[in-house]
View 1 (cartoon, one colour):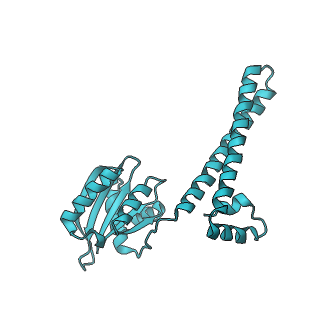
View 2 (cartoon, rainbow, N blue to C red):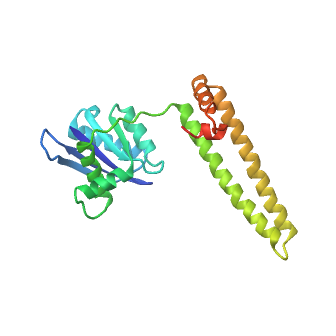
View 3 (cartoon, one colour):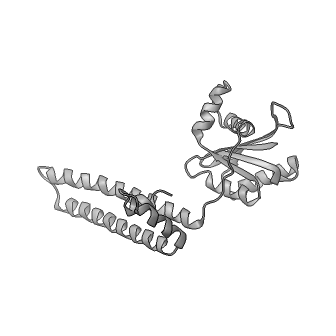
Length: 223
């Protein structure tokens, strides 16, 4: 089995290619460093793989779920019909400890990720439906706006409690709060519209709302 371990960074990726070849210990076939975390960078990896393994569809690609930096990479290799697995970084961390791996560099991380892919039976990652991706973005954005609203509200309260405060500052602070409140309303409207236009999603949400304690936002955030 040939495994490509990819250590994902915000701007660059490191890759390590290993082949077990039926042996207990996989052999390193090669590695690449400081490849851009872009489609052009992934195409460079694709060409490099073709020279080493021929049929890249037989390559198992393993990477960590690092923020959202992994998504572009996962979609790219899935489109090439590779088997893609996205794992929790904590799993790689504990695996490295279990094999007594000392030190931590991006190149070493790519190697240990590839080794993990050989040892473990990993589930294949499948891209979510577009509607679920949009749903996730909307709920996350609402959560972010709500957090900003709370921060600005606390700021306004502090201003109002001050002995002396500029009327202009108070007005501007209130305007920011009003804007954030309006954005929350718009995001919730967008959530309702999205769910109403997808029969399957709407049915699943209706089932969740039948559970005591589940409100609309809580149910929409499950995905």
